[in-house]
Image (cartoon, rainbow, N blue to C red; front, side, top):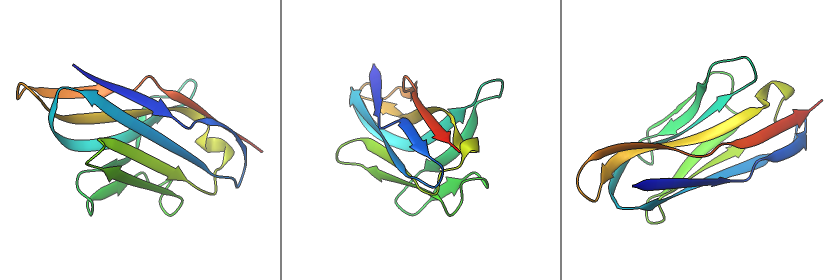
Length: 120
């Protein structure tokens, strides 16, 4: 079983920055994709950013130019650097990692979620 632990959320003023990190542990053979999603109150969970390889990334239009996703394959971690934060970025952020377990079974795991609140 693969577990994810997130860190780095908090309260910040508009225009500020936060850095989210997610570390995967357990029986992992390989990781294919790593991503960050968010869910604001009353809204559906949405993809914020994903990374497949060091050069293949995908961002929601609303965060392009402000957020940067990166991964450390050696440590099985994914990081989301969030700059120029806006009040509309307020949400619970979840990391998601997909790959193959040590038993070569596909897995998809979610983090516990971390609150990001941006005040105006």
